[in-house]
Length: 42
Image (cartoon, rainbow, N blue to C red; front, side, top):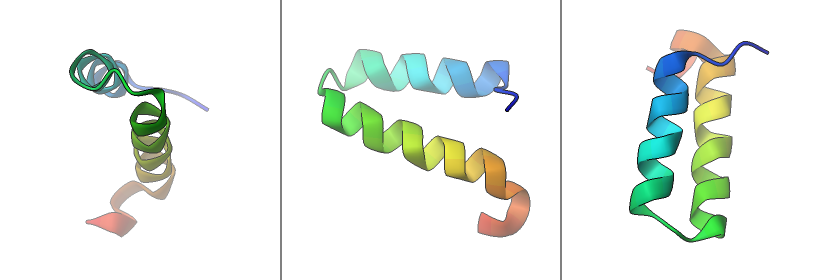
């Protein structure tokens, strides 16, 4: 899987704003599924 620089930046920003690991895990899962799905979720 290729992770874009923009995706990594979003994860960093989210982690900085939401220190809860559970919330971070949910966000990571959502972002990864969004990446895999491409434009299907638009």
